[in-house]
Image (cartoon, rainbow, N blue to C red; front, top):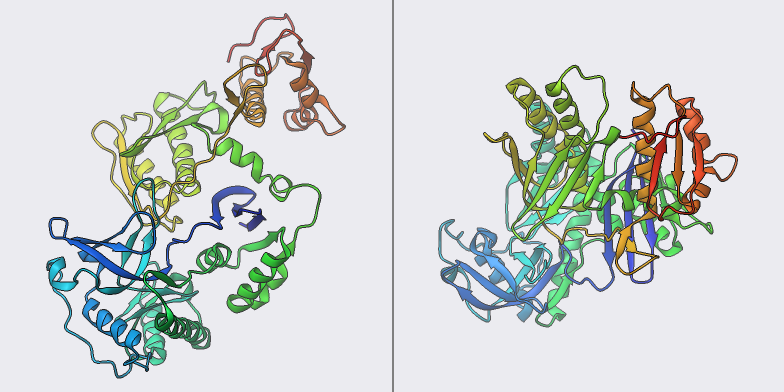
Length: 516
């Protein structure tokens, strides 16, 4: 398994594409105008409390007030409020928290009015970006994320990632962290800290502690509301969370961004700096690495899978619905149940990819193909859960319901990635699917025909619009030639002036239509 990060810089945004063995598994966009990213810390004012919701609206400078629920205050919110007031007035000059007297913790089932008041200054962190008509969701329990550790002010707990498998390793890491942890701070040990030495953990700890001191220094000079700590840029944030030894290349098409990536990689993995390369070519970087094509074929309402199977993805205000269809699938399965299981397993893998790729959150309902056998349903459920294990977003998957639906929730911290895949119709008003999607459909149909026992021995001819026909046959390494190398079968391509741009048909040697 190899991973590559492709970074495209544009005047208004920076695009990040994560490839796993050449397949697009994650796509993110950093827009320069977005000032409310997850992880950003703001010095804000409580606008008003809402006892009915046990929450408060907070002015963070966004057009819509941010939402702060009582459960997001954190148990040490009184200590935080006292500290902020002291720093703002200049009474607190020691930011290390070693000698800062802590206030009593708030009750976990208390009321918002007992903890905070209107017009009170508060330090908050964005935990959910503005989505649709809603403002950002915030928390006053801050956490500063590093490569291996997460630093939590006004805490003394040391928590170890549950994904670290062995008890011995958890115990070792806890002892190491306790030996280097500054007083007044709690620590969360991330999964990537497994097998790391104390020197690496300490270096990460020192960097996080410095970020805290810089944050406190910014509070003194800050107005209300204002951002006092930026989350890392998206490139560094992605590398911090997902970088590992399986990365084989990081390709960037901007020199300034290249320097930022190298500087950050020098901090977390200096021996891997050589994999960061500047892409300098007339061909756009996303087209060179096949990202543009995968975006066009992965973000539409219909998502094609192998041998004719496909997904239908629908979005509503309340939830997302995914329907699994076998299509006109040809395979070697003995019966309908085996076919359903095979398609469902393929679909489960693709759905896990789609959720991560589109960053779909909230309630998701998946309608897999019905299966009678309870053992097959269990296989599907276990397979889907294992495919979702690599997803960094928090999620919960319920077993199949009585009517065969799988329901799940997935954490939503930013707006869903929406990309328009339809294009303007060149012949009339309206829209048509992207030509590159059409070519993928033709290729899928060719594969189904040559693998079908009824058609595989027949002469095959495809009739298509002259533009499409020219694309299929042009050059020494044409698409048709690639078909020949793969299937050992020469397919005749006939241009038809009478055909519309998106129309094509397959014929046999007797000029009879091959129905799929």
